[in-house]
Length: 239
Image (cartoon, rainbow, N blue to C red):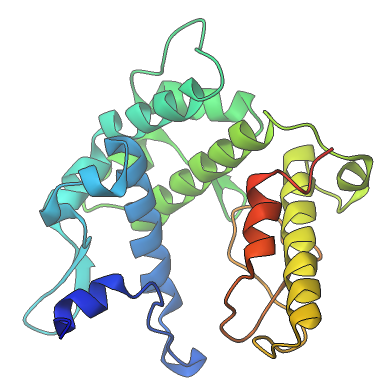
C-alpha cells in the first residue's frame, strides 16, 4: 500500500482555497521570492531548504519574511546574478552583468522595464533600506519576471495575429496570443472527447507583470488533453 506521504508528493494538484479565504498579498510575496530564488540558484531544487518557505510566524501569529531571506534581498548579488542568468539565455551582455542595484536599475530602464511603484521609480536606497521595503523588492522582481518573459518570447517568431493582439509591447501580445490559443485548443480537444472537465471560459484578471488583455482561463480544475501537450511542445501558436 502506498505511503500517504508519497501520495502527497505524487499529487500535482495544489490546494485551492475559496477567494474569501485567499491571501493575495501573502501569495504575491511567496510566489515572487520563490521565483527569484529558483532563478538565482538555477532551479527550485537547488534552493537551500531553509529558504524555500520565505515566511515565518512570530509569537503573535503575524507573518514576516525570514531574516535570512531579507538579508539575501538586501544584497544586490541575488538580483544581479538572476539578471545575468536570465540574459545569458539569449546572448551575453557586452559590458558584462551589473554589479550593483544601481547598474541593474539602469539596465532595466534601458530595456523599458523600469521598476515603478505607483508611478514612482524604485531607487537603490529603497532596495537597501532596513527594515526591508518589501513592496519595492516585489516591484523589482516583477521587472525581472518581465525581462525573463521578454527574453524567452524574443527567441520565437510571432504570427501576424499575435502582433495585432492587445495594445502592449510585442512580447506581451505574443504571450496573450499563446495563452488564448492554448485555451482554445484545450476547449476544442475536451469538446471532441465529450468530457465535461471544464466549464465555459470566463474572463479573469491574472496577476502577471504584463497587461492581461483578453486572457481567458478555466474557472474550475482542468486536466489537459494529450493533444494540448503536443500543441505546446511543437510550438503550435507560432508560425
